[in-house]
Length: 252
Image (cartoon, rainbow, N blue to C red; front, side, top):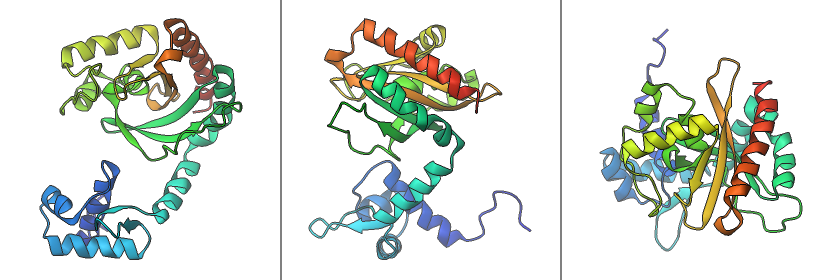
């Protein structure tokens, strides 16, 4: 028996490192991945073509670049449905969406990012946003991410903010000291705000979901065009999210 965490199949490790590149960006080409991981182009090409043959990647016939394939969707769906937080939270998400009249998202933390699990539109909206399942966003520029950070230890927050704080829009808080101030404000009021910090024209309000030990398990957020997201609406949506978060947290 090997020790816990020991990697026994190095070739498999390399293959998974290649696949994980697509979690942050796609499409990707052989050269990009080769330079990022320090692997020979021939090795990267063989790994990519194997994943493509298995359906985990697809290749654009014109550009030759690769992106995630349909087989990944099956794994992703199985993963999401197997999470307790998905099973518990999703039934409430339609209620939240219909009460607020806006999109509602469920996320979980992963390192310095949030991963989107589900997105639910209100019943009266025919236009449904594209699937966000599996998408990553940095915590520091999302409402729900800030709410998560506000419920973490100082050490955990430092780890999450140790990398580059990229400015996605002119509203993104990319100064660490100012960001720490915003996280403290988030902790005090009990919810986070994304003031067009990751996408211009979109505002969000989010809350963290904590388990019985007080640890961050996930988060809920409401997203809307900035013209519909007044200060009054933000406070109202925050109240709605807090009420439902309290119900969900009792079962985590």
